[in-house]
Amino acid sequence: MRLRPPPGALPAATLAASALLSLTAPAAPPEGKAEGDLRSAAPDARAGARTGEAARDGSDGALAAPGGAARDAQASDAAAARPLPPPVKPRVELAARPPPLHVEYAQYGVALVAEISLDPGAVCPRSGPLYSCILGSGGGLAIRGGYRSPGPWYFGGAYQFTKMDSSNLYRLGIFQQLRAEMRYMPDIGYRAAPYFSAGIGGVVYGNEWGVETGGALIFGGVGVELEVSRRAVLGVSCVYRPVLIAGWKDTANYERGTGIAQFVGFELLLEVRTELGRR
Image (cartoon, rainbow, N blue to C red):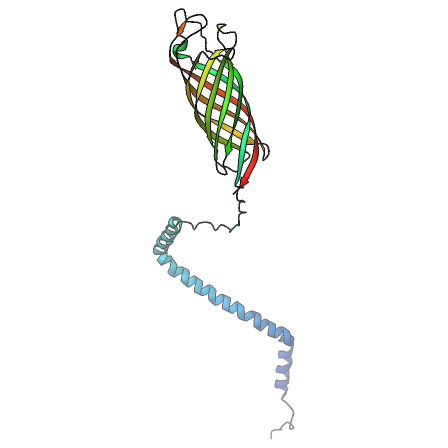
């Protein structure tokens, strides 16, 4: 006859097994921590999956490496051969230069001059009784005046006298010139500006302002003009001047032949402007 346990009572073996499980099972984590562990475990699983895929791709890429390297080399060569685009320059608004003053002037002044003889020509033969040269180098003064246009041109005239070295054949040998002149002065935007000059004229020569011979000249040269103010100008110039001189008999009764004497002239000038009008 078997005895049945009362209703609701558990067998002793079941109770013993429950006690053993409770002693060996770890404690259950808090609710938040368990959820966090599950969330952190999910990315690790995805990372592992990606690592496996990369490993598989690496094994496949090892087989396709030669073709890929060639394509990469071709792409790098094409990139190196491709010209670089021009640098983009910022748009800068430059200040516009003000228009020049279109003013007409009367320009006049004086200059210290030096005439350097390069070759006296037939006036002073190299040998014979006329070896002493009656027409050498000298220095003097020039007086000039003219019209300065609103543009780059100047037109005027000049009178110059120079005391020349006559080897004591003249007491005071005076070489006089009367010239028509022009200058071309390009506008370069600075106070100091270069210019080109040219002209023609006539000459006379004799003792103590006398006239014993004469001739004609032409010249061409260059110079620099410094605008001290709107009304005052300083400058220097250098010109080459060939002079045709007619033959004559000097005070020692020597016949001087007709010839071309060559000079280089230097000037240090000071000129003043007077405004005539505006355009």
